[in-house]
Length: 287
Image (cartoon, rainbow, N blue to C red; front, top):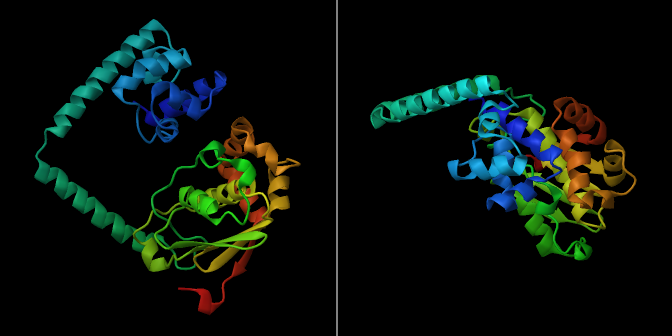
């Protein structure tokens, strides 16, 4: 089975039904984080959720396993493939633990060695830990009317949920801006997940979330490796072609205006280079 294809198919069917990931999650009794993972092909829905999911999306199990609408002949072949896949998985899991452990250790060592040579020291972005979830805006908004730069506890709560997590990450709230500092060094990136596009995507997402959730800030600054990336609220408005940041408080608007665009690598790369002012951090600020 092609999990990535199935994930895209689930997302496509959900949007046709005009449902959000949260809507589907609530109907199935799971988290929107789980639905997000299904749609990005990271994992497959639990067996107990398959039939309810097909009923919600108005598709058959055959369609779900194939990742597209299909006829009876195709459905039979998918069923055969699924049974074969399941049998192979059972056989694979019966292998001795010591053999599997040896393979895992070998792969980890190999990846570490390769990372040393792949990650360039002069890379502008560097690498990060495993990809964190990119959530819909309703994951961050609560009691919206009272969130401003003086509500440090609420902003801290939002900050802890933001993507691009790192063990050394701190937040500073100023009168009209928010500064985020990542204590990332190139030695640490050897152990991390190298994905420059995701870093850019996450920075755009982080800035837009903060402008949307915190009423009275006009600038977000993010220090990552040897650089500081700054963006103003007006620039974000221009990037997403909107007049008022409050338009994004509605989860459906967020999905249509923000989420749908940052899924495009072309949009992310073009927008990131346009909206962020990049500055070299002076030596005493670099860890």
